[in-house]
Image 1 (tube, rainbow, N blue to C red):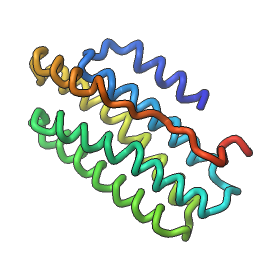
Image 2: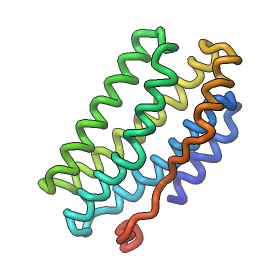
Image 3: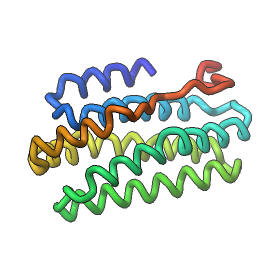
Image 4: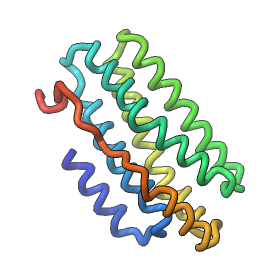
Length: 165
């Protein structure tokens, strides 16, 4: 999780439009969950599968829904749109499969973490700078206000399997 603190500091140093800051903060929490998944080996496979289900149900599902609801109509670049939607589809499918089966769970957890990390980097480095230019300031303010009530964080989970390395 220390590694992702520096990642968050880098994001904070980027002049992000306040309307999108909440999504960037959520990305930080997603990266914490990814680090946890990477430390899952040696844990009971059922616990890892449950953590992935919990991660999807309590974090990723709502995050993806809010991004699609608030940002999708502004992505007019086909390349960015394809990556955005395809990543969401693949991550959803990877989460579902990993949560439903314990087969190869440690590899699945690591693959899911890598995919989420790649998606976060794409959104922070390519999509959000594009949207900050594309979306009028007044609309970005509205998006920020909608997100004010959304509280998505790296949730507490027991057992804290990532601490047992």
